[in-house]
Image (tube, rainbow, N blue to C red):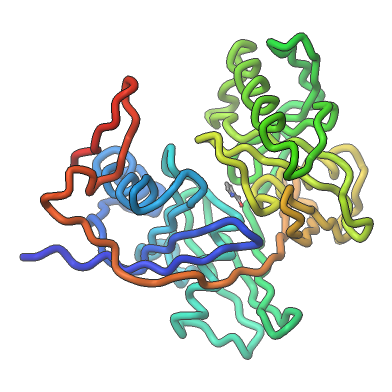
Length: 332
Ligand code: PYC
């Protein structure tokens, strides 16, 4: 029997792209979405690389595979992945998925509409709200976010010392303010270098993973360019690409840090600017058990839709992977 076509819809959320796999792809086994994600990672990694790696994708793209939900309160299951691995959660990706569901007519944009997404790290509720220029604003009630370690000092290879908090917002982040770099598109090379130094120093300090979470996102925070906003960030993702959006899980982790310091009251609005100047509006409620329940609001636009073709004769049908310095294709 021929494999079902892989249908996709591409969107961007405040600049950061999401490729939603609407149908097709490998059958994933599991008693819940976390187990299905594990099945994708361990047995079908070729599908992740086919969707995200060149020549079909790129290192900025995040994939979102729609799967049947297991949590009976959820309408859809979603497994996020990037150029490196399967992710637990992705804030901009969740907004892109909901925009895609609206585009496909699976949600009614005219109504205030709630949709629950079953993700590997738990159920996430998204609300569709009226937005400026009749573009809906999508607010994601993310998973509980919390600080794992505060004021962690690091010595970088350049000799600079930085401090930062390690926090969870659906992914784990090292969040630093005293990094010494301008958060500006004209300074990308230096921002990239500083984040890589920080990641190396985290590894050298034995902080590459905490509480079972790889600390593989680095978030540099600075003053906003627009005084209407509260902060600007540069977020390096696990593969080294920077987030064009203000990063939903990174904004959630930042809220947890602000709340832990008493620097932001529950319910108060936090406008988080990205390095490209796009904005997420966020707030939190105290979480039972500590930390915060974050709400992150942003907008997404559809950029493309179609079928991914994996021709059997194409040596790079499963994506180009750099292994030991050589470009190889991933095989199932
Ligand atoms: O929005 O959570 C996010 C995210 C994580 C990595 C890229 N974007």
